[in-house]
Length: 483
Image 1 (cartoon, rainbow, N blue to C red):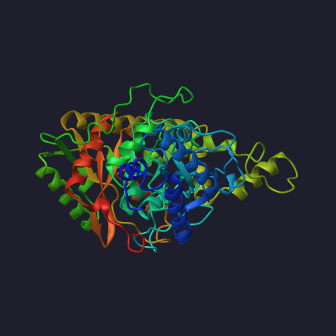
Image 2 (image 1 turned 60 degrees about the vertical axis):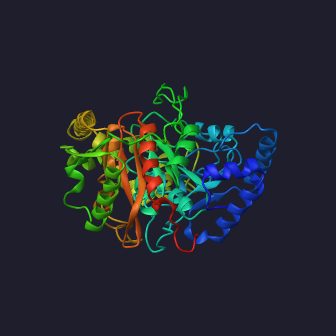
Image 3 (image 1 turned 135 degrees about the vertical axis):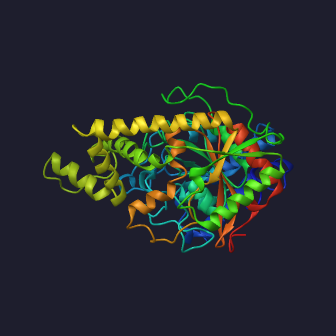
């Protein structure tokens, strides 16, 4: 059953081929069988089986939708009432969320079954899922390689068949890069399309939740549930949500694809470039035309991003002070000691690094030189994409400069680690929607094709991805040992 899509599972549930309880139990058994991947932080077995029983009653009465009774998993950054929400950090290892994130409420209302909470880089800061308090997640395609980050647990779980779909969050590529490394489909929606209420913040002007699935069709089903205006979130956009499944089979005849020359220059591994070029050739066969474009300020994206994201993280993480909730050091001598030791003992190395960078960038005398300048660069990058998307319908290229690297390979070289997000970061700065779609293999590891669209063009992106998946089978490949 774990090899079926959401649509196939929904049809099986309605036809009575199996019950939600049976389906859920089969996934729970697989999670136990493959604990070595370290994809889950918390498995909510009792709750899952209880929810599955309720879903079976709904299915029997005809009161159901496509996600009713479907076993899914949540990145451990979404608050879930009464269940540990850790953000992959020692700081929140004892935190039981007192309320649900809007995304969690939406899945609950749809009747989805939550299998548990997935591992992630601490506070979503990382590109390899090695920065988790709970240990590194392994890539199902190569157990010595990283799955990508920060949504590495989500990508690994879907690729290994430990959940039919998962949620992820994307601040600078954290849905798309792990989706590429694990050979699944990952969609980062337009900023403001999915509610951030109850999604623990890393960088508030960049973070966006989205679906991680096997196929574009499944991503359409999941995004349909996740998307929509939320009055509880001041960054949520009040814009109608289209029927994402409706446009999947539209023809690509006349589609114009832009290829930024900056995406195909120095730094891109030749074997990855070959895969991406082959994928673009498939689109030409489907009726698309190719046009070379330029994003001239792309080289400024990484420095601008790390100033902005670090500044926002230093502000957002100031709430974790050992006083109100989360980790508290033992026997503090005074308030300063409480703050210093609680934060020093509970935050990991990468989180501390970004807090320090952000605090420096926001400090008196440096705000204009760093943070303000970075925001101006951000505007230039957004304008570059705006101009490009007036010439073409979508932009394509690689998601990452190489395939998944080895565990421990870049952990002591933060600059090299940051460069692994070189093609994804600019999209978050601009607030655009983008996808990673399985496009082939290099060195026996998956490679993702990056598809970038205009604001609120998720329906078109899903259509473009789906048409490619109808003529290729990369998204159907399974890692050895997880078939």
